Length: 65
Image (cartoon, rainbow, N blue to C red; front, side):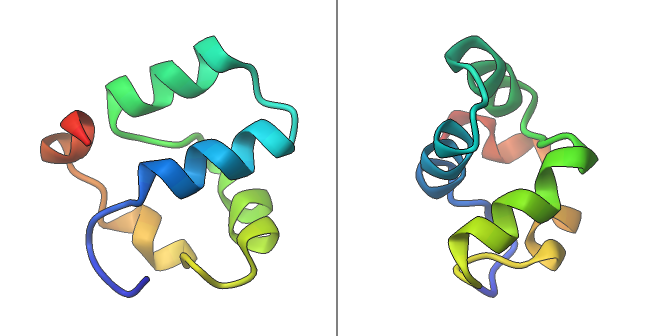
């Protein structure tokens, strides 16, 4: 991905496949943040479509995506 904006559609799809419930995924998007314990599994699942660095550049302005 290489940008400072998280692709919430990709994150949501990956997290769903990894067993994360709807309400939990919804709260992540609302907070604009993915818990650290889920970041690596999501990056690994997506095979490089996003990187760990993408999570480091999260900001509250991305909550509305």
